[in-house]
Image (cartoon, rainbow, N blue to C red; front, side):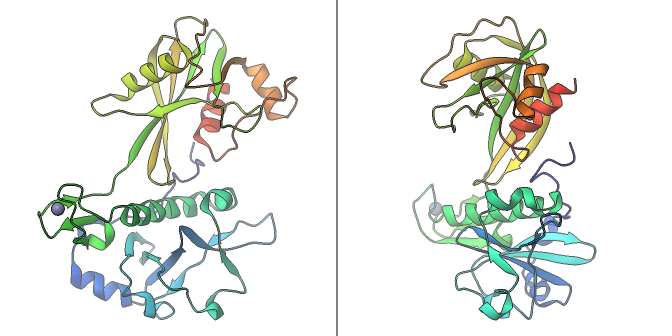
Length: 304
Ligand SMILES: [Zn+2]
């Protein structure tokens, strides 16, 4: 499962040095620091026109982006091979001469499958932390707008009521109920026609992963499940979710679908799924692409 998109961030986050302001100031100017940039939620990507070659994150040296280093959001991502990695959320565009010939700002969802697993991991970290900062402009305790950014964007501090805030991650359980050689997929009304995916839902406060899987499956399909098995997780940076992939054993295959939650659900054998993957299912059913954890769960179950 090493190839799960967004899940292979190679950086050592060095979280203990984020709060050191003198280190921050010096490292932003250091020759071994490199900078990726985001503008309006999109990363700058060096696009490969040859489809056999992966596109890449476009990095800049400290000198190239020096006029942007005073920006509110220059996030320290971590270290790798003696280099410091930073992400800048651009408030003003870069000089076009720096990148227009080889790179462009692209929606991460649309380019992720053309990047290396490591690059998607780095971008997931950068995008989620930038989005959290942009989405949290007021203190949720006293409503003050006087929030100070600390630790290069990993903390906010309310200057009025002294409360500290940390980046949030929203956990989502996503699961495949199974019964006697079949697994269950469902479709929501908003899905493209004939696409089916794994059932999913947000974990609620005070709930274990197992509880959330049991509850969500029951709510959506009417099935009682047991023996919840954690498989793997995937950071999903839209804006800051964590997908928690699980299997669960259903006690029967009798469905009672809640039409407010899902439009339809279907039991599929491995043979059915093989047909789906080669585009030959008689009802032209298809499943999400490889970047989705649902896809990885299905593939993982097919190998059981
Ligand atoms: Zn406050």
